[in-house]
Image (cartoon, rainbow, N blue to C red; front, side, top):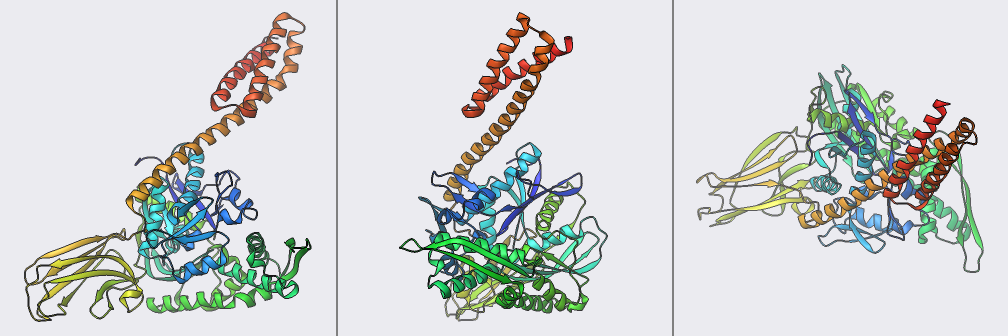
Length: 609
């Protein structure tokens, strides 16, 4: 891939995504074709097999609910059968099924897609937005993820970038990116907290900022807590109200469920600025005998807060744990940065203010800060901006499985990276000549409840009684989060090591096939963009020619030369109209050339007169 050209930062969000870049030392959010700075993270496949992403996908979600995916980020990197996957299966109108690697896949139309594929479609849309802005291909990107994503979820996100044809320079945490946006270009020496409550996830990071150094002290979160859960509470409330009145469960109907979701999301947003809102969904259900049922109800902010109070309290409990691990009192925090659309909710802002004892900062845009921070990091990595130093931490414990099914932690969560830790273990059985090293990541004391990152075997140990052979296990984590694990026989010096590469649950062959298919789509999308640009240009030229006809008629009178020029113009205009209606790219170019020549002749006639 190219190592030149623009570097973009992408916030791959659960609800919306955003792309930004640094130009001339200043970060800028790049708007999409509709002029919006964020794009819905929604993917759909139409009946004809056409892929829709963003606002186009959202518009048809109600009538094509089964083939429209939203909230896919909540499933990326998860294993089949997990509680989160089961929850999504029960509440989503689209079909979620098991993949060939104990992973999660989504069926749209007659094809089954992996989660990295779905994410790559959203990333591609952001890439195309940037390419239209820069007028050239974009290959390099920094992509953000929730701070509490495990290595598997991070690798799945990176693979999504690869499928989208991007060279992913780095995966960085969303709260850290927001802090970069907050502190960039400002002389700040402060202890700050980033409270990030988005559509699908919650993160909290505590960090020190000073002299262009961003030092994360501690981080925590919940990768299944966000606006989707707030929406679900409203949906349940609406469904209950309707069932209470009509004895009909709207959740059993895909189209009705999607309408409830849209109404819930809108009501939630309305109640951030109003105390009451009306939810009105006519003809939401039709009985077997043709009777139409309507849902109309008044919904207030007080009712909403009563439905979600426990969700907000969960975020505050996570804040308490994070600050406790950092050894910092809430009163010692200089600034609280709110990120994510859910932080617009007055109840959330009140809870944050009450816990930290101060009003949250308004210094960053909650929907744009993460993409801006990613762009700043991208610029720093390619030396396009002032040097900044980012010191991040490991979000989860890293260690190995030990005899008896336990989990021995070598590098604790919230350890600043790069980091290195060693520990000496002994053989557990008599005459043991090998040791299997199983590398794990997680929070549980039990090995089988944590994520497997990799495993290898150290062989050639001397037969000896249990406990007589010492083996040193060493973990090394680079600044990029790459983990090397080694095991060394202390007696002989024999050593084995591996580079731990988390799996996104896709094989390299699968990724290769997806990348090839994606390149075909990208070429077609770029062709469509060029086609649309040529249509716009031809339409503009056609209007210019039409406007000049009266002037040419006046300038040439009834002369034969004027009549011939006007006749040629009419032929060129008809060809242009035909090309605009149904012509190919070549037809557009041919018609455009002829029309531009006509326009030049017209201008010459008028000027000579």
